[in-house]
Amino acid sequence: MTRIETDSPRGADRGCDLLLSHGYRVALDEHEREIMMPYPPLGLLYLSSHLKADGFSVAIHDATFAEPGDFVAALDEQRPAVVGLYATLMTRGRVLEMIAECRDRGIWVVLGGPEPAPNAERYLSHGAHVVVVGEGERTTAELLRHLPVRGLDGLDGIDGLRFLGADGKIVDTPPRAQMSDLSAQPRPDRDAIDLERYLTTWRDHHGYSSISLVTSRGCPFTCRWCSHDVYGRSHRRRSVEDVVDEVAWIVKRYEPDQLWFTDDVFTLNRPWVSDLAVELGRRNLRVPFECISRPDRIDEAVADSLAEMGCRRLWIGAESGSQRILDRMGRRTRVEDVRQKTRMLQSRGIEVGMFIMLGYDGETVDDLQATIDHLKSSAPDIFLTTVAYPIQGTEYARDVAEKTVADLPWAERTDRDLRIAGRHSRRWYRHATRWMVNEVNAHRARRDGRMLIAFRCYIKGRAGRLGMTLTDRQREEDAVAASGRGWGANEERARRGAGAAGELG
Ligand code: B12
Ligand code: SF4
Image (cartoon, rainbow, N blue to C red):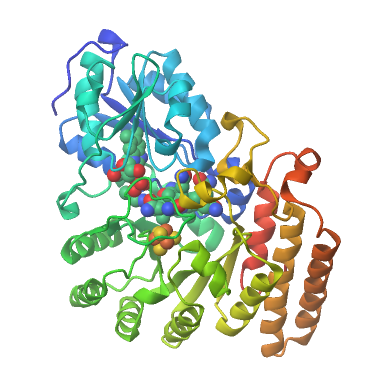
């Protein structure tokens, strides 16, 4: 393995070329601790294997199950020339602390993932040296050759970066061309982390284990609230053979009870899905799995292939039962199509999970009622609710920018803490969620002849509806002083827990 011999901020004391880490810690968040469905950060694992194949010495500090102090210990043990941190909107606070811990030790700090690019100026002014925009493998390789030798000088010659120029103004270099052949990439470096810990956590909490893998990069669709900062609207897919090889390797190495394909839209390419089913069948691989897709990318043939491959549950971003709201979201799906495809999948023994979003711009109580009706008639096996929040860099964030209120400094909040002036209060949405979940569960229990449960859900649903009436005049921006931080862990737990099929909200 070649090592880059240069003057780093640490000079001769330097250990590895790169230490990769992230700010996510499962034990930090009460809700996460309760649902305990951890998956490792695949992006970092891809970076690690690519860079190792390129000759760099790379270590990963996987923060998921670690204590915050463990990162500093890893820095002192590994003595990296460069630290690369993956950040999402939820990990901002922790990543800022990690940046400071690196800077204290004179280490170069590079950021990547969906959150840093649209917030680059702020991360850079909080101490990060460089933000990588988009796909990270090749850009990071160039940075590892450059930073320890030339520092910030001449960074404008590297594509796919945002950094602060000598005048303190942000510099954007040209976009990095995406890798054309994803199948040529080495598999994610799962051996660099303690993957067994993920599996045992799954088994302890759910009685089965699950491993994630990804077969494509990017989504060409146009949902206005969805972050496209990493892959834009492109879409590239690995070859069927490459994916099946990885499935076979995972099964042999880890023996998981199920897989999770983390693709944005797993069935985007219908012939590919059919080929995948054939190849998995030919190699006698039938592992239960979950994935996400859209109704317009499912037809009879796709549903047959999914069933043949062992799909246990398919998640659909149903979002709303109001066509008007779906259109405002730029979803490009039809309410009726969601219903039809749900039946199509369920008739083949595949469970359907739905993501529902409340509180999108312009939504009324009639739209919420339409969503309740939609959930009753579609009858998904499970649905999860969330209240819309403006992820920075998205069209939705731009749409509501003038109404967006931040009551905490940037470094102390996440995008989920932002408030939309004029929208109903958070308390109102808690009542609305309670109404929705219990109306649907009452309907389901009546249908199944569980009349006592139906009655209890009915009462809770009416209580939620009454709560909406009583808090109707409250607006989101009014409650700032009263409630402090935004959507806290407890609120999220209540919504998610209540959303599960058969549970009572
Ligand atoms: C799987 C997934 C999850 C999983 C597991 C997360 C995990 N540990 O992997 C679960 C279900 C837990 C999850 C939860 C959430 N998620 Co999520 N998730 C995803 C999803 C669908 C796939 C991630 C993935 O595996 N990508 C494949 C890899 C290969 O791509 P990548 O991670 O982007 O990595 C590349 C680059 O980013 C870059 N890179 C990555 N790291 C680094 C580091 C350095 C130093 C550099 C230079 C480059 C670099 O190079 C990599 C390879 O090219 C993404 C969407 C997506 N397409 O990425 C959303 C996504 C990351 N999630 C998102 C959100 C909003 C959430 C939630 C907040 C949702 C919610 N309401 O609860 C929670 C937050 C959880 C938390 N507490 O942090 C947003 C984040 C938006 C943002 N700006 O931060 C995304 C982008 C979805 C979207 N399009 O809006 N999520
Ligand atoms: S929500 Fe799903 S379908 Fe819509 S743009 Fe995002 S990844 Fe694509």
